[in-house]
Length: 306
Image (cartoon, rainbow, N blue to C red; front, side, top):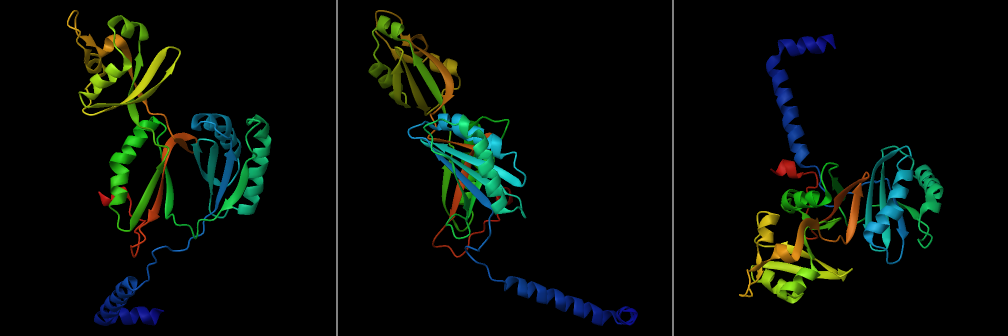
């Protein structure tokens, strides 16, 4: 070793030449490394599904998913827990930490479920636990997005405004499916007595809103009160601006405004499904590759793109 060091010190030109040659060889062979569009990868995930016929996503979350998650989260070796609640079914995805025994964790999950099975609705099916192998699946990745300080609708807005446009710009990205969407909306609670007083019908109200480019989705009548949801384009600056919208002008009295025949407040559209990430409400993205692409640069994040 001392002779080699001594030789390098006294023959610096040869040493520099060897170093440059090794560096260039390294760069050359780096770009020769093969890149697979869908590389095989081993995942350690456990999937728990529970069915409850015709139950709403919100009821499924409260009555089934949350009790199961609270019990399962105590198991050692779990990295993340993601859950998807849809009408009639609860889906829980459990990702394990590297080196964790899948078989042992499967048994632990079954034991944890057995401890809270009596808390689940009697008509719900017994939770089915299985190892989820994604090595040959079409999905490149599934990511969960949540913020414990944000409501779900705000997370949904951020995903649509920032994350989805960035991911769609990544070469090789195909279909992106979002679960747990919750869109912001404005809700109207109609006042039947005031509508009758002024002789205004629901159809007249909807027509008045439609005339100023506001789209109304059908409401549901219950307890003599109708609630309806609004998509706004263009959007009034405040709820007070909404209240001043004229919905009828009978001529004999003052123009009737929306605030006189309905109470107005911010809300959200009813969710088709709900998503939790480590116990926090959020949304998930299932990313599939473009079938015509050579490779999908899945390592490129939205932050790197910008």
